[in-house]
Length: 205
View 1 (cartoon, rainbow, N blue to C red):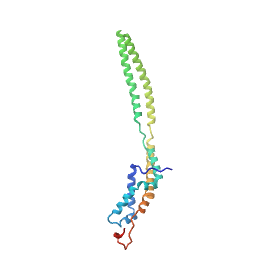
View 2: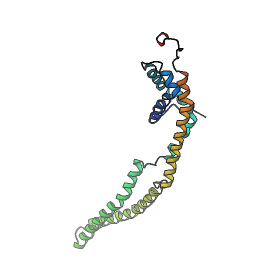
View 3: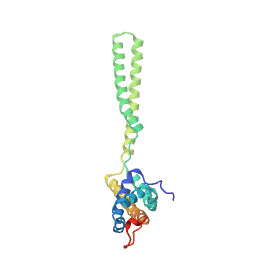
View 4: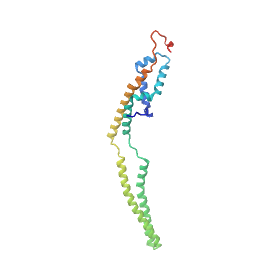
């Protein structure tokens, strides 16, 4: 199975938190205490941070599972395109109907006065066309609203809470694997040499 390309930026805080926990292990503290200046601890911490992706590779399988579970727990989002179509479906029927009614009133009003019969007929025809268009777009808009409602329904609250719990459980499994198989072994491999009891620490290279 392919490996991930390192830890994602939003998960670096977890790595730093676990690094501090590993640095606080008794054997690590005892080894670093041999350097009263604290420089060894700082160097070891900086070295681990620089090797974060290398260290995280020890828990790569758990991390890939965590990423997959976290992705499925996210809420679906409406796209800008679907929002635009929804707005058009709502506005088009009302605008077309209003314009059609206005044209019909003008056409029949002019016809009643007997003025410009050809113009009145053309206006009435345009009014009826707009009214028909409003009816068609209203039906299409209703269908669009139904489809949008079905697609945007998303998981139920209980399903969302279960998905969030699964994501948190996967995160904790990854954190344990990263701490036990990644950080602790790495720090212990790179601890500074501890001088012998009868040796002056200042003479150690």
